[in-house]
Image (cartoon, rainbow, N blue to C red; front, side, top):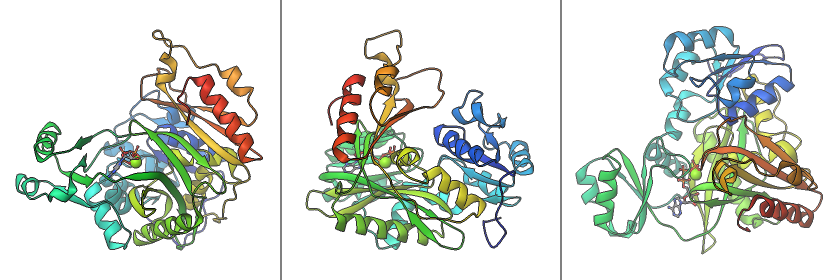
Length: 390
Ligand code: ATP
Ligand code: MG
């Protein structure tokens, strides 16, 4: 069942989440704050969301008995990662209200289908070619090189991506990736990266957060900065219009993030979309009157969608497992008391027991009444963490 004309699902009801990662955990926290009960489905016994949910079904995402139990226990179900199998969402949707819908998720989880959707919406994306066969590999235009070869499915945090300069490197990279369906994208000259998060209700009403400026390191989000004047206002307008077109075109219900590149010539190009809240929107918990998880809750339950207001400048630093190893082995946690002595510092840790390099352990949001104060605190936080200046 899609979220439709039905009456809203009120506090006291039970909500389900497919996936137990940090995004699921922050959704569970938002839902529990409003008096909902939660059930998380995730095979991992120590998943961040499973640890704090009222119930945790430890089963595979394709386990039909577990899916049916999730549907039985819940009044509505959402998802926290885009690689949840679309057939599982379809099975749940036969029994319960589910958002986002399986069709939108199926498009977002496949780069080839995702790019086709951007083209259909008239939103410019990187020049690219789909490579599924040796013939398509041979037919790639020279103009797409140098480029980045990305697996069509299951890539995240820069995984499943290889930079290629020549046709020989391209062929070798495709072999290396096992000859699976891929998309080759032209390498674009980036000036900056940004993202927009929208929440769209079943009636098509949409609200959005301010445009977020993102800095990546090694293919992983490093810092998100959100304050007035951070991104030129004409670009902000174009990015919001493009995001709304992309969400409308999918008849999307839920929270969606669209990532953009701003090129050296100032033009805007869409990179990819995520059918869920996004790492670049974590600052909304501390810097806005409604967070991206509050809006995910409202779209799922059919409660009113009110435009969120950012009340503080914000800079979010991702806390990767690498920070635990800056002095080598064994793992030592970063200096939390010193960090928390900084004005406007908000620490979020996801309850992951074992730090690993590249693993998202938490994030630190820094808020402030002025941009200067926020930047000063965030720079000091980066110094205390041993992160490169940004
Ligand atoms: P995530 O899902 O964590 O956002 P991902 O693995 O899906 O990441 P992308 O967003 O496709 O990866 O790429 C990661 C980063 O690599 C981008 O944010 C950008 O910095 C760089 N990048 C990707 N594609 C291009 C491109 N065509 N030209 C230049 N830089 C690129
Ligand atoms: Mg990305």
